[in-house]
Length: 136
Image (cartoon, rainbow, N blue to C red; front, side, top):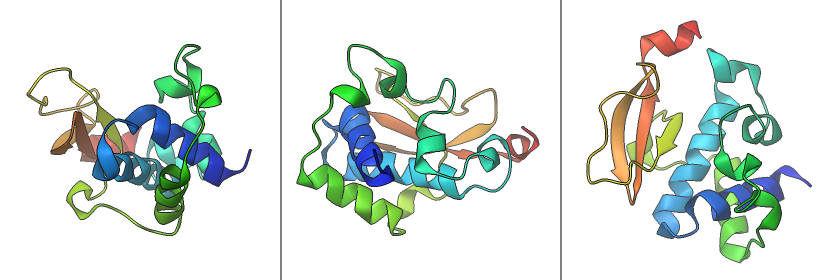
């Protein structure tokens, strides 16, 4: 599977119900990780490496709702291509993490104080790296 298809499947699985902006936000985080040269994600330099990094994306390991069970449509491929070609949502800045808190509030730090809250898009909270992230 090439990187375009892998990213399209991850977008559908992680954010398929979040609308265009939500799917673009998830794609932006993946590509921010690919482009990161320092900290934990500095060790990963491809979409494949980022998606398959340990304990990162539930859709890469969950047997019930998995990237392997997805059938991406044109919109998922278009968003994946947009992100691979440098497209990013400006409000995300350098966000490296996202999660759904299943509540109306996003916590101020994530994870382990390595990220600070940047913005919320749909049901997901997005986090930029703190200085401590670069020591990971």
